[in-house]
Image (spheres, protein in one colour):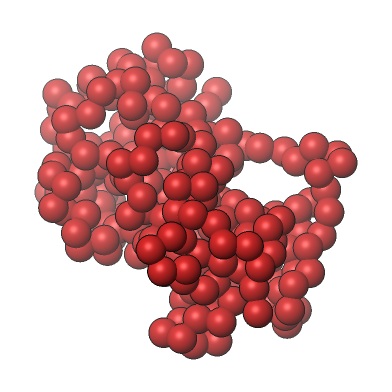
Length: 229
Ligand code: CA
């Protein structure tokens, strides 16, 4: 079964989400508090996607996200936020979330995002798609879905891996934020382009020598980003 953690303290919203996930063929694991969510994930290490509410009675959803990533997990993480303003903090994304939805959301919208992350998390590369990319100090293995810089492994989320792969497939090419969003998140609504920027910012922290003066992922002002040096 395709397990999805649903961390939400409001019973109404949680059961609404759970019913819709079951209808879409998922097996939801329910949690009301951050601590219980973390222990459920320990019991179900095969969970590939987590929905994390931000405002919770104990630790907040950002902290839950941080601890999931600190444990070494590359599972898909979607933050559920009460209002768009919560994401202005973008801390949730900086600590490792892949996507977010703002309440109120439609079941179709939520399911589409979970489907996209699930496909990515479970995706096995086609045999003839398997190739290694080498670029400067970096080596990307599509077989192992790993990135190395000067021979040292850099831990990436599934989304970060997909962004790097897209860059390596298109070296020295300016990619628009829309193209990156479309290709990596697998959706074509352009309402959430900010998520591209926060993921790029996080990637730079992981791969650049100096994230404040990026050399590998450069900004193409008013357009997008480019891999090339
Ligand atoms: Ca809440």
